[in-house]
Image 1: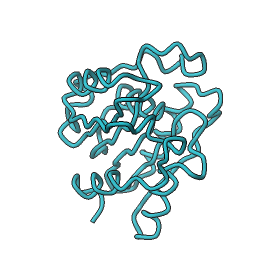
Image 2: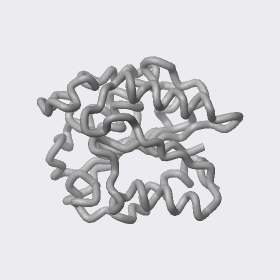
Image 3: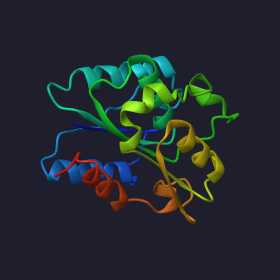
Amino acid sequence: MIVVVHGYEGSGPGHWQHWLNDTLVARGAAVRFPDLPDNLAPQRDAWVEALATVVLDRGESRVTFVAHSLGCWAVDHYLATHGAEGVHAALLVAPPSPYSLFEPIQSFLPPPRNPERWRPIAQRTLIVGSDDDDYAEASEFEALGAQLGARVRILPGHGHINAAAGFGPFPLALEWLTEVGALA
């Protein structure tokens, strides 16, 4: 099962996560795109609990996370709390700076970034960022990858990799899902 995890404010209709969800549904893939609670006033514990409900309700399938922005830290907190059992891989797109001063996301900071919790899926995890993201520096994506043992891909001039940066379709997500064996 593929679990799409939105960030702060959710993912509006033009966001690549909606395109990905719709594409996966059309292909008949097992996908969930939960509406996490209070996306304008997110709370770490509520988001982690919501993810746990989805992951624990997966049946026999493995979970592959596809997260954007604050959703990346929600996945990180999920793994820190629940471990990686039943989790196959994670795509972390544009995680915000772990040093952000943006008030609404403070309950997620600092993110745990625990290499032991990520170890079972680190080889199948990809962190994607941009060299001109307003919410994190490219060096922070690189540091996160080094800390977790995950690959990092920096896209030139792609902003926060969201609808405002022109991302409705985001084929890289489909390519990665196929690469890690989450999508046939």
